[in-house]
Length: 311
Ligand SMILES: NC(=O)c1ccc[n+]([C@@H]2O[C@H](COP(=O)([O-])OP(=O)(O)OC[C@H]3O[C@@H](n4cnc5c(N)ncnc54)[C@H](OP(=O)(O)O)[C@@H]3O)[C@@H](O)[C@H]2O)c1
Image 1 (cartoon, rainbow, N blue to C red):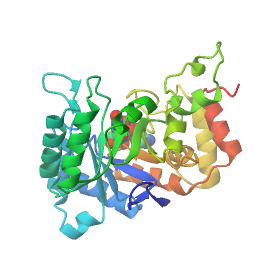
Image 2 (cartoon, rainbow, N blue to C red; image 1 turned 90 degrees about the horizontal axis):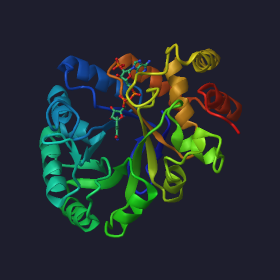
Image 3 (tube, rainbow, N blue to C red; image 1 turned 45 degrees about the horizontal axis):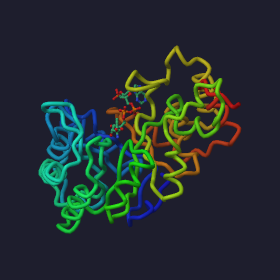
Image 4 (cartoon, protein in one colour; image 1 turned 120 degrees about the vertical axis):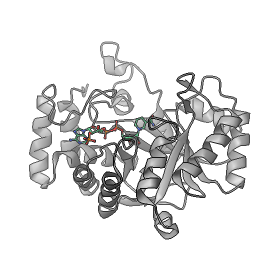
């Protein structure tokens, strides 16, 4: 497994992360199998959020109850969670001091741990008051409850606004990215081209901003064709892409999932891929991609086969 020291931290991070958004209904044995397959593949980094599950903190609780980690087992993994999406009376976004501080306490209880390694601000709150965010982050950091902080789905200006008051480094920005949902990448290659939809700026230079500021991009939904509309692998709507994936999978002797993962880890921004599968064998398959280094020709062939244009 490709690993690197996550910039701004002392965490040795794998290029692949196992996301826990879909484990609410899984049995203890299923959660353990997913966890064990992750560790066996070198993935010791787990992504949670307060909002995942049928109840607030539901998936965090399911994870802790199913695994009952010993203190030393806990210390061998990186636990990341998120704050700021509220379902009750909503959904709405809430970066208030009270929500951040109480959600961190509830995450600690649900996860059965005394510290969160990385806390992400989940989705930009239109009513954010960055001074309040700073006060909340200072409090949970000083209390030893959270080691590092980051954001998710944030634009460069939104990060800058937070940084005007937040003194801790923001080390990660978790953003949607797959071969087929690749606005982060496509728009940088087609600026100022009126005839091309991929020229429409939906990401506002976020990828380059993250690279410039040592903010690690964590790619969520790496297998979804679009926004939660199912995977592109084996999808008849993507015959050309699947043909290229299958050919490269054969050439590298890895499963197709690994080629999808490798397309993201090949990017020099040194991104992490946040898997959402609940199937242990798919974690094993996808994790192999971290060690596949696609050539530039192969990377661009996948890009074109997904329907993106090289102008
Ligand atoms: N920051 C954010 O706003 C945000 C938003 C969404 C998600 N996330 C994070 O990102 C993680 C991944 O999200 P996601 O679940 O949408 O991502 P994903 O890995 O792209 O999709 C996984 C889903 O696709 C299914 N699937 C079907 N065939 C598959 C195949 N061949 N390979 C892999 N998966 C296949 C999986 O089903 P099976 O379980 O049956 O394999 C699962 O339902 C989440 O767990 C969460 O941690 C973050």
